[in-house]
Length: 433
Image (cartoon, rainbow, N blue to C red; front, side):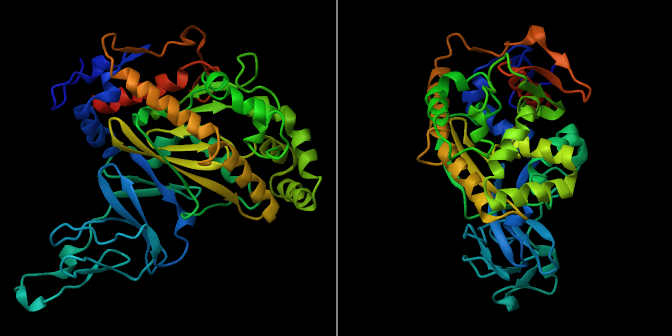
């Protein structure tokens, strides 16, 4: 039986096996219910631990409707504090990032330390003996956990563990982290591309059907250039990974996660990728260090894959090519996308510079890839408002789905398995009691 939620909408009826109703992309009440039912209940990506490496470091983030201060306290532990003074509710941190021992509310001067404890109250004589500072610390996100440096948060007091939530996608996250010979990456909070597009947050993600059409001009240009080789972006033109005749696969996981899986398609390119790296001294050292760290077979796989899991973790994180992408819903028709280039630790500067230049070439504000995507999302949102025929078709490849050994559903790279996985999780969360 389908669950009716407080708004009276039958959300189970809006998502079928092969199609979804366009109102889930355009309706204001549905968006508000998504905040409660999805963003305030499931796991969300918060930040990478390298963004706040030292005690006192902080970064301001958004989790659903909640403004959050991600901070490393004096003990070196990461805290996710609700950015709301316990007195009258004003935000106590307005800077986007920095280092601070204290956060002071601008309204009446209440002051909190980096762990969220209330350490200063102005005019304390105005409060009676029953006032206890320890009872007025900043609120904290109930559950915080991490995997390989990626910090996740849940605003729900209980629910599945992070390990259960990630499931077999952990081996894909490993691909990005283990592209470093020391198994560590760095995400710099001040190095970010920000994109705001006038479209719904669910339009982003894991579509292997569109590149031949939306990005055809970009691929033509990249096919004639050499300066992006040696990166995940550069690997796009070595062999068409978006052809259904290739070994590339689309893959849907439990909990709404999905990926475009290029591993089998890229593995035969290991020798060419290594040869390209060994043209320079730092590249030669990188190959040697990778083999020493992981053994030859695994090192060759990792080098061929270029640290690109091309993974979407529902609902707000994507690990694509050389960057971490965070999706921030603003309204039904407005979304912010934050893209943080990933830097490898334990490598020479030229390795990271090549990765960064490749990222800029496709995803930077003056590039062609991301602007193409933002434009098509906006065109889609405008079209969805014309809801005389309200159903959106997601049936491509249903007749050729297969179930893999890890329980994921796979198909050809252009199949809409990824969208179906995400929408079925949307339905599950939106109809949960």
